[in-house]
Length: 246
Image 1: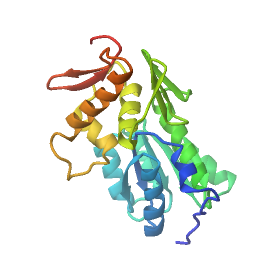
Image 2 (image 1 turned 120 degrees about the vertical axis):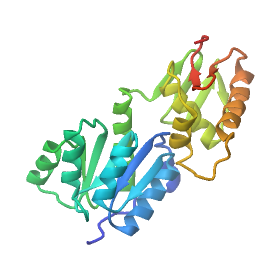
Image 3 (image 1 turned 180 degrees about the vertical axis):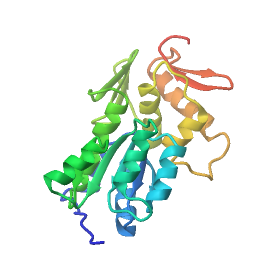
Image 4 (image 1 turned 120 degrees about the horizontal axis):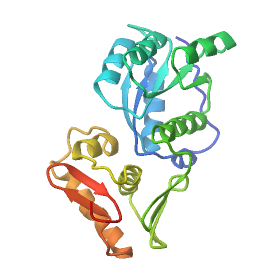
């Protein structure tokens, strides 16, 4: 298969602005693209599972919850269109971005008709891929805005700036990702397992208390701006971000 990925003109720092603490599946048979695009997505703040086979990709898509899937069409096992059709037939609503060298109108219509949400033709700029994935993830949470507001907390997903009670917070990368993820799920109980999958990229080497420690550290930074509790513990269930006691 011919390599058709195009390196963007701008720096990695530019790409990192498009950040989202979400879990993605990237199905692509090219080892080079798996490594290059997979690394770029992780550097942009995504948790990413990578597969080079359509059959395995289908199994992953049905076994895990993803916020979006980036899917090549030309795959061993089953091709991307067949994979997509099976997902839709089985009721999956996960947003899918097809990435392929097929660039005719008929090819695009076929992909969209199979259930794709978006279509990107190779060669592509990495920035455009990240922007399209970002847009799909916003759709998953039914949000068109770059700002998330929970009480006196404001998260700007475009600039990755977080303020509380008007005071800017200095957060490490994973603290920011955790803040944004909880803010997007505001009012909902988020389990430790969900946080591990979305924030820590399924790292099997995590210590058992890593999520609790991360929550504790984040609470300290949030409380420095305003001592009113914003992250609440639901014992045995997880955590919920809400400006009032759940």
